[in-house]
Image (tube, rainbow, N blue to C red; front, side):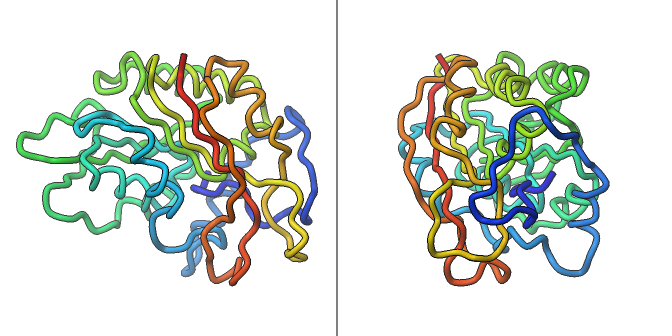
Length: 251
């Protein structure tokens, strides 16, 4: 699934009911198979992640995880901030794109989750890994890696939860809770209702309760939930869709 697993598939304000879909891996592979990036990718890291990360107060050297990493720009950005970061996606095509990211000095790429954070002298590290967090075996393999055992200090998701809830809302929220250590942070962006400025199709649009309810029920404390706009992309144009920026702490 791409880092904006939303795809441009719904009219503004369209609501997706939880638990009424399936994970269509072929669809996400198709988005990452052409010469152009998917329509939700800006080509850079998410500006809202950069703004929210200082508020999360995650210490350098901590472990982080991006669900639905897509082209991997956010995973790499987190590594540049001194974190050892795994990017996971259901699309192997997306992961192949992610692996082509240039890494700045001090950041290393490792092929195995077991090596995340284990390279001497590295200020940050990245590992791109194929996984569907809604599948128990995949989730257990993630948590079985030494670097992720007990949960990560930071989980980031942009435009993936609002797709996963169409497959299994409670299962997605529970997976997020298992993946984050007590006291760890969640930074998440998902589509928001009430966007009068857009007429083009866009990501699934959620109410605040839909964006936060299942997450809080699974064991997160909501720290903040604000309306923002997704970063501009060539497809989104000058007025990107509205989004909820959710910041939460694992209890």
